[in-house]
Image (cartoon, rainbow, N blue to C red):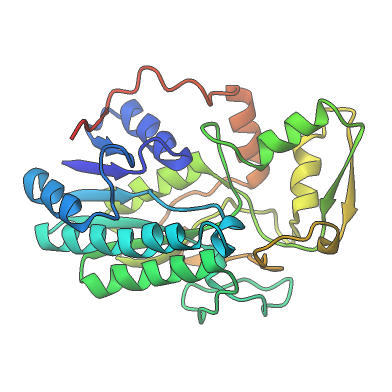
Length: 299
C-alpha cells in the first residue's frame, strides 16, 4: 500500500494526479480522514493498513501565523504529527518521503552561493524551527527515509505566488515585488516527479534538495519570478526591498539550495521558466480534482 498524507493539499493533489497518470494505486488521507497529531489514530491506521511507502505531504505552512496565533498548531502538526507518522512507518517497515524547506537554514549565506544538503541548520522562524524538528524526528525514528527540502512552491492545485500575481494584475497597472530575497521556484509537478523517482530508482536514502533549476549564472528573486509570470500582460513589475513588506516571520535573504545531489541521481530538472510555462499552458486546474482514481480514505 502507498499512503499519501495531506492528500488534498497543493503537493498531495499534484502527486495524486501523477500517480493516477502512471496507473499507480494509492490511498490518500487528509486531516479529516487521519489526524496525524493523534498518535493512537496514526498507530491504529498503520497497524491496520501496513503501508509500504508513505509520501508525507501533510504540513502546517502558514509561515506568518506560525509566529503567534498558529504557533501551537504549527508545532503539533510539523513536529508531533511528523514524529507520529515516522515512528509508525518505522514500526511497519515502510519507506518515508518527507518534505522539508529552505527555512531550516539561517540567513547568513552570501548571495551567489548555494546551501549544500549538509549545511548547518539555524532556522530564524517558527515554521523553520518546526520543520527542522520534523527532520530530526524522521531521522531519530530509524525509518528508511528521503528528506527533500524545497522552496518557493507553486502549482495548479492551491493558492500560491503565481495565482496571486495573476489576480493582482487584473486590477493593477503596476505591482511592486521584493528584489532582495534570492532563491529558486519549485513546480509541484517537478517535486512530485522527484519524490517518485527517488523511490522507484531505489536511490540512496537521506537528504536531498529539489527546486527547479536556473540558467547558468542566473540570479533569481521574487521580482524576477513575478516579471516572468506577468511578461505577457500589460502590468508593470517594479522592484523594492523587503522593508516595504514587513512580515511576522523572517524570510531568508538567500534560500538558494544546491541541486548537485539531486542531479547526480540522473533526474532531469527543468528550469523554473520552463516549469512555469508548462504549468500555465495546462491551464488553471485548481478546481479540477474530479477523476482522481486513488481514494481519500474514509477511515
